Amino acid sequence: MDIIVCIKQVPDTTTVIQIDPSGKDIVRDGITYIVSPYDEFAIEEALKLKEAGDGTVTVLTVGPESAKEALRTGLAMGADEAIHVVYEGAPSQLDSLTTAKLIAKALEGKKYDLVFCGRQAIDDDALQIGSLVAEFLNVPQISLVIKLEINGEQIKASRTIEGGTQVVESRLPALITAQKGLNEPRYPSMKGILKARKKEITELKAAELGVDLTPRVVLEELRLPPARPAGKIVGSVAELVKALHEEIKVI
Image (cartoon, rainbow, N blue to C red; front, side, top):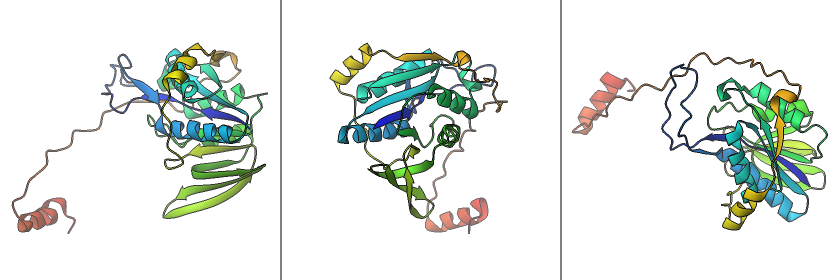
């Protein structure tokens, strides 16, 4: 089974984010980057499927030169190959539609049975890439998957919905978006990390793939959320009830 895993490099959640003077991007100098956690679930599931049979796992990302580190992480976890669609513009100008078109273009002529994405990237939380890529590849999509079974060409997946779990069946090839609970991602071994450093990464220039890179979504302004007001300590249940009634107005 040949599997593609689409991943994204995102700022570490422990990084302090600052808005740059333009108000349309973040200050990227000094930021620590990681693979988006939902993408790690996707990588792990792909590796488990490969280990249960045969085939290859290829990790793919769209982004600047620094995004290669995300691919190195995927290779260190156990992926066989990596594809980097190099986008040289401002990261904030790369919207979901353009990204999905670039991914689909990069996969033209490439053999695959499954394509994995994380349910969403934790930087923009758009939750769009999986659906868009599936549409451009003209393959069925099952999103928010927490359990996956494959028998020959048949797929049986459990996915989260509000208030429960839905079981969906489909056929290969297909696209799966990985949800938390699908698995427990492995940590790269030292051997894997060293091997990943030596592996060649296939580079494709976004500007040379015949995709219009003009964003359909224009970012007008970035703002940090307002500071939360200080907490209030009450001395008794009666004071708490009074505050809930008069100040917060919930009772």
